Length: 317
Length: 263
Image 1 (spheres, rainbow over the protein chains, first blue to last red):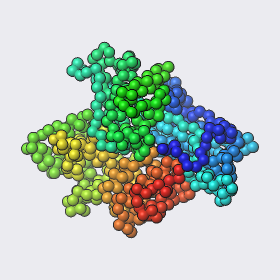
Image 2 (cartoon, rainbow over the protein chains, first blue to last red):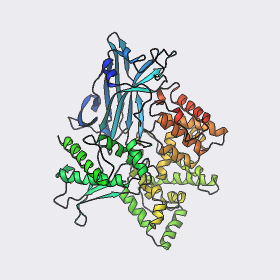
Image 3 (cartoon, each protein chain N blue to C red):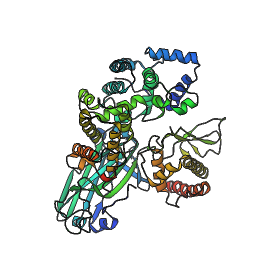
Image 4 (cartoon, rainbow over the protein chains, first blue to last red):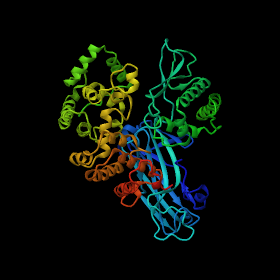
């Protein structure tokens, strides 16, 4: 639903036509005021994991700085009836950041924004100080109406002309520091009195908004007492069994939702950031091996298995 | 400054469930201790002054309400807890978001006033034979009472304690829940503060209802799907003003917010 727009929005074709060139985000920290680069490793579609080649960096102690360059060689194509903004309007470029763990969002404006005969070039640099963010960071490079057009020309009636409204997204990444949102909450509990695995849920009042997808509300327990335990000390030892456990767990979670909440989850209606339903919605979106089939529990379990296998084995590679 | 002490969810649950399992005489005795502001539990010594100041604020709030557990008590305690734990070098937003820290305060340091403010268990707990309000002590991240008060004041901060008090004094307890529980994509700090200031202007001269505030936050969430308030004319303040004007034109109907959303 959030992606549904009733006004012209930046398309891949228009990005290509206008010569948008997006350099990768670069990440740094500054031990003893010396710039030290961090490495971004692709973890999944649009998700990167940050590591420090020196193995010294900690988000909590050092914070993090990102740098980003965006250039648009033919910005004129973005304007007019075939573009996304009126001819007399001004388009701004910004980065919207969201930290789901802390339920915070904010805005970064370019440090420099220069237009020459060679096109438009924006440079961003922003530092999150220690203690400002935690867990995850979504960075979305957006175009917005910076200054509305005083005159709307013929053919431009459908174009957005309200200042502050986003009219396109050039890039979007999620940085995973140690996010709860990226992985299913799993605990290892050694006990000769417990089964190989089980799942615990809290009392959910409103999984669309109140309950987060955290181990407080959902948690798989794996018991390393058994030699077949699929994971020990965070290392996967039996991926087939883990897929089975995860698929069953997701099935139980979907089955636990009311019909109304399930529909809201599938259609992204009224979901609060980080809530159980919003993370499930994100999960559904990531299931691209085959569409999840909700018409029966057996169909859902089957399609969950297929997708989780693809997801886990892709991560392995 | 207090030391950063934590209590896990499991530990908090174990302590509160143990109280739940007291027999009637034991539980009455516990409540009598709490009514006399005896926390019963042991806690880190760095919290002694912190506790005394919060107790004083709680009692001050009760004087204002003639002993009734109501919003002025929340506001007094909220302003005090924020003044004791301001964001700075000793206390970060990451720490303020740590439920285990608030569980320590609620269960170990201030169980008496947490109980006195919310003496009734939620339905599910009551049905299971419980006696204490688990959500308000430890169980639900945005309902842990003292945590929700800290965030309410932080998100509403107007620069000084007095200005913040003046901006919030006409609200009700439901406003706390609405503000905390409707972050949309995430809290935009300056926007929240501008919205509180705008709503305060209105509630000072009108009998504003919680329903209007709910509509205000809901309309904002609907708009923020496509609009960045800081980038609109006049920034967050201008946006908050227009948002409220729009709401009043619509008659403050929480269910009729679609007109404002530029999709």
